[in-house]
Length: 171
Image 1 (cartoon, rainbow, N blue to C red):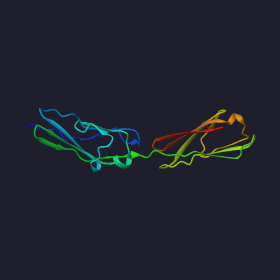
Image 2: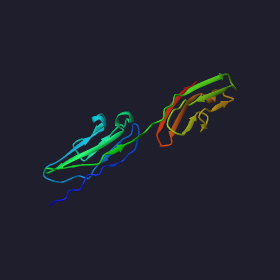
Image 3: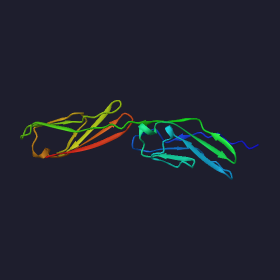
Image 4: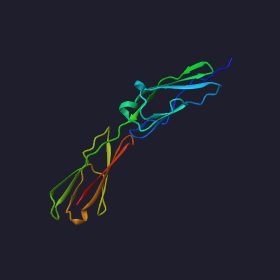
């Protein structure tokens, strides 16, 4: 009798929201082979490859794509079903830059606020005009003048490596 190996799902994940995760099993051979993937709640949004040995979830949205996946393969009348595979997505941090200039005259100060949210410890990288660089969440630039005008960019990175970037123009 022909022994057909049970399917075991492998994954490129977990990934950050907005990225992609590929779930796959080895390709089966036979004169009649079908693949039927089962997703959390039957969701099909942003998932391709349903009738193949590989599905791609892109872009990943944790609220709909996290959960258990399985695949059933029928090979020439023999039905095989994988164990459940739990897909996990990392939260991407969010930020909403705010700027306060308590004294916007020359030699005043410019206060930058990340207003960032995310899971775990967040890392901050601010870049701006006049060589400005800071790793503080809420940096303050003192003794400002026209050289401090321009675009400030904030990159927030979570412990899982997910990144968000936002910019603001100060003039």
